[in-house]
Amino acid sequence: MSRPARPAAAPPQDVRFCRSVDGTRLAYAVHGAGPPLLLASCWLSHLEYDWRSPVWRHFLLELGRVATVVRYDERGFGMSDGEVRDFGIERRVTDLEAVADAAGLDRFALIGMSQGGPVALTYASRHPDRLTRLVLYGTYAATDRGPEALELEETFQQMIKVGWARPDSTFRRVFTSLMIPQASEEQARWLDALLNRATSTENAVRSRATRLEADVRALLPGLTTPTLVVHARGDRMIGFAHARELAAGIAGARLVTLDSTNHITLAHEPAWPVLLDALVTFLAPDRIAPGTGPATVLPALTDRELDVLRLVAGGRGNEEVARALSLSVRTVERHLTSVYTKLGVTGRAARAAAVSRLLAHR
Image 1: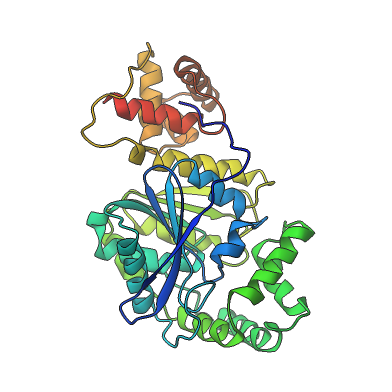
Image 2: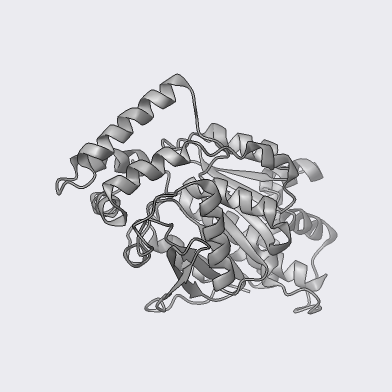
């Protein structure tokens, strides 16, 4: 099963509103087709503005090809209510719960991105029965609290107070350069503008200070949801050590390392197809409805090809498969190429399509 041909224009997103338990109105958007996938995103978002973004649009469109994507603006940001006082993690978790309920999600996959990670981890701890799988992308369980980190944060806070709302983007460009250092000028200008458009100076200061207090490390050993951790090795906003802590702390979690310095993976960089393949492959089992029986008949794969495909379906990378079967990585790649040819699947989604066919045949 190959990925459908790209449409000339993406179908529009459907923007809706709901209220959290304290009455705060939250904006959320739905687009795409397939099993449900909820994004607990970073604090900087604007549903309408992000939809046209040269930084985010590729991410949203590709996910929408394999899932029904639900995303929302956090309280105080984007199209959600801006006049709020409480940015604590407990309130943010109830916001996620409200969006999931309003969108009619029963069981779904959840992506915790950047500062949305602690919220997603807390939700996974409290509602494991509602999650099929969990992705932690460029995020953490607790922020750095050392003297150097705190001093740097004080500097950031002062820069926000001085420069956030200024028409001149000089101060905001510092944050942009840390988030996407490999960006084009167009992409950088867009993120500069988002920083100002997403929220007020007061909200930016208060919410950032509150997020520093979040620490959900104690929840990691108790998580049971299948988990994928994805992080850029050179991330300047959230260090790679956080990814190691997450992957080591959650039983069975798989870590995918992106060769990038960008906090947000951009469409033009080599890390993007690596990220996309990891996400599509990890989410592939959700595309097979339980109890539906075989959807297709597998062609005549050899025993070794089936061995390789079964390990890939379990979330193993090529190097891990090679070690498990005492093969070279090149031999594993040849077996996978043969599998893709026999299944008639091509392109970036070939790996995920092959896994789906295997799972459907079980």
